[in-house]
View 1 (cartoon, helix red, strand yellow):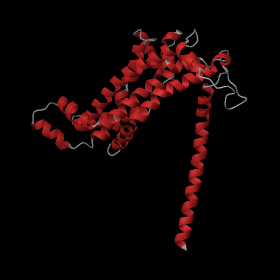
View 2: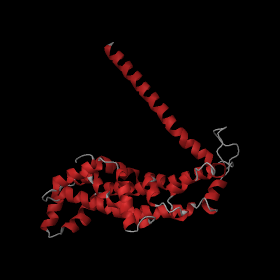
View 3: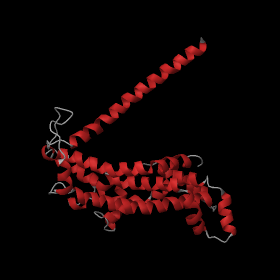
View 4: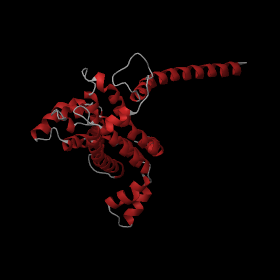
Length: 287
């Protein structure tokens, strides 16, 4: 009788938890679904009288991609963001992996102090340094510059070494020691032994480094402040489409642009999902 009551209580608890999670999922998905269906509306402005569009159309995607004007220059914004994201990804990935390897596999004076300082600095929100960064870039004439954006995104990336370090900690020391006995240098051990065994954490680092500039708005808005739309990233361009005077004509195009921005990220996650999860869980084993 006691076991039956325990089982029934467990079932009821599971049902309650799943109901709550379902409600939260629906609340979370409603804005995304509305954005998606609105993007396929023939109506240009914001139609709040109905959830689904009265007339379905793909013309908004066509106008965003192939018919730029003074307000919408989506292909240019997309290219700007892609260039910044790719270079940031390459530089940041190199910084993070090399820092993680040094902290995990090398022993030197001040190592633990540096690790602790890096963790402490990560606790401070990045936007606290925005004003200082802006004036530094302005003093060297790198505001309104994509190169300046790349420097900003890549500069502190090595502080995010902790997960990669945790993954490198799981690689047996005997592999590196055998390579040292054969006369391999530290660089050769890193590139030819450690990295080939670390594909999950490399993929995780690549995706994380790519996402930061791809989705960022605050830093981009502060640094790219010349008012020239050709220099904007996608986040700034889409935000400026939400001005009150532009909503009646451009809101549906904004929705279409929002969907297009999410497509590359979605594809990247689907392709790399296995390695991404392995990288997170592998990096959490030690640390």
